[in-house]
Image (cartoon, rainbow, N blue to C red):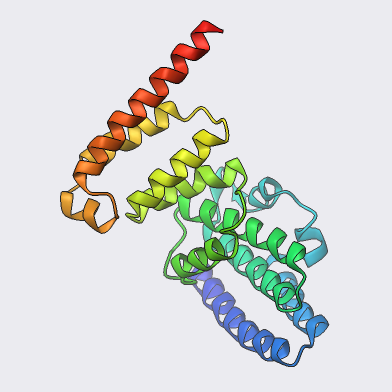
Length: 225
């Protein structure tokens, strides 16, 4: 009951903050908008912006690891505030600061999702989609791309999951086994779901054959070195 009450209060406070920040951005009151985010970070997460943005994403995640369990809804709360802060910087043309926060927010959202966060609590799928649009022109860190691959498969975006797999491969990551397993799972997926996910069964079979050929050639090349 306590946890549920805490989450409800956090969502209510976050909703009010987002509305207030939107108004402040319209009035070009950047400092005041950033204060609003910082105040909420302190109230619910015992953090401030300077500390949050000085920590690695791994350190942030560890802050919400309790007895080996990730407090995933708190983690997605932090991700949402990072996204909001990034939006404030984007509104004043500070692309570097905005991108830094968007990348970190995306990673935390994806990690929270992987560890059972409630996707409906903060409209997580929509938030992730917006972040993906914001960082579309940039290469994701490998650790984030790996999380994205799992996420895209879990939400049935199979064509995009395949794209993510190939991006990892192109970055030099050894994902031969992951790709083999992905195509294996897709072959067990209902054809209707594959169609909806942008990767019809015929394309899955073709993709699997091409992947096996690609990875076999890479293994052979490695053995010759």
